Image: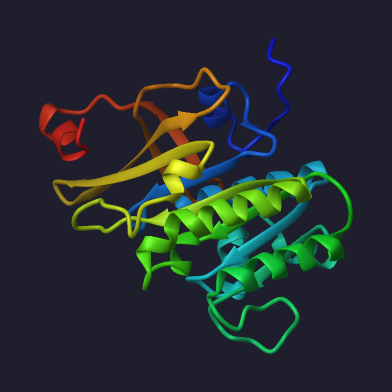
Length: 247
């Protein structure tokens, strides 16, 4: 049995694909086109941290704090209670709110400083951080993606964080908005989508997970009302569908 401490994602069937969970202290790139399940996956990861007593911080750049709370509630996850219990802080980088836990700009130094401030407020202990999406910090300067990713990994690793950093891919080309996060990350969880006969199908593939004998197979996933992220099983699609997924 591996002696590596692993953090459950809160999704049992997904944990089985990565030997029980994400290794503690890793920075994981969660990549994919819009609508593929990255935010819901991140919400489950955060909720599991709250359940296990971790200090949890969720940075949202493309939705409001209120939107994240409402999404979680759709799947029976009470983020408001977690916030009130000082187990979770949601940093809003979208709305420009005049409160302590908002970012006034998408500058990487402000992000790092605010996350450290939040960790100090939550207290000592194992911590989970979601940055959703991280690519928002370099959309207008994609050449900075690798430098920003390295900075976040180097500085925040000293604060006992395990990090999920989502990265948006273009829906037309499935290409990343800037390159760099994937090179710095300890793991890459890639979400994909296709539309076949008017039906949206979602998939996940673990492209990289250091120190882990992870699944190498594409798995179909779905989002179930009241439950959330669900792994259906290995993808068994027609050849043309797999071609659309570049397999």
